[in-house]
Image (cartoon, rainbow, N blue to C red; front, side, top):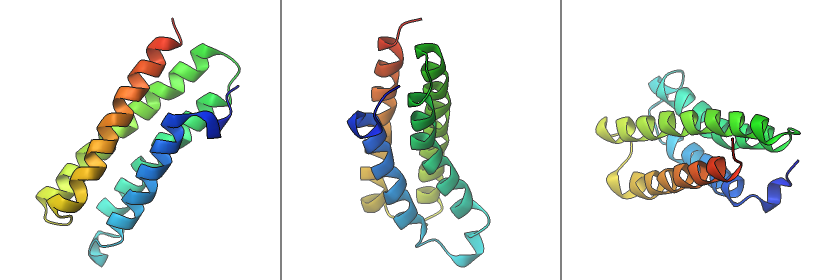
Length: 117
């Protein structure tokens, strides 16, 4: 079991989720049940899966949830890029969040490796 506040990756993923919610609040209302909903679900899935894994009793279980968080981070990255391509988010606003997602992906990979097989 891991304490969430001590996990830098969880804190960083929470920051990304918050920023994603704020960015997607600017999307047009017709996207409310489309991209807005999807991008928010994938954004919150990253820290949620890290948290669920941290609460498990074995490293193997933790690695499994970190793997799911990794997949969600790639979904989020894709949706952020698409949002920019659709001109829903400016380059200026999306680039810092994309950089943070990539940083969390690297942290996640390193954490998975550190937990062994």
